[in-house]
Image (cartoon, rainbow, N blue to C red):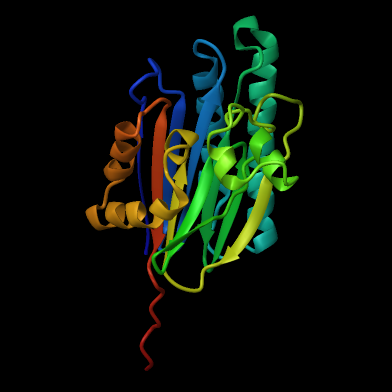
Length: 252
């Protein structure tokens, strides 16, 4: 059975919450979750994140069906992201106050025995299994580029002054290049999708324990409180998606 739950909070400093999440269970092993973290002055970030999530949500509600092939799911996801990018980019050109607006995106789709992920920016997806956490996404950020080139260590990246500078976002250019991946679901699945308002505070070694506590409580509240108690300098969003072990039908 597929289950999803999420929570968002404006944090302890920001006056407005430009994060938004959406999740939907369409079947026993069919559904999706996504998080967007908007950027832009005044209401622009909120406009970008809301438009993006609503467009993708409509695409998936209408097009995602049980038994779809891998390529069909991939095409559906990438078409949805491309359309959202075009709409947000066009809006940014039509109204001066929206100029330069954009949003990050992390999207996880479960279809049968496959997890499909797609992301743009520095919001993240973690998979937790056996008491360990694995980051499934790779940040599209300045510091990640420096880490990849060997100019920064992972520890140095955590406190680098440019750690918030992202290199890709939905809506900032005529075209967007999301990263897409497929992962087999060969056992129970537990995912955390989050904005950087959480991941900036969440040490890698703390992810599994925090996610486990949330799953035991059936709520993302412990993760939100973790970020708030750590400073809460940004909007905070956490979404949990789980899939139980499939059960075999009895013989006869």
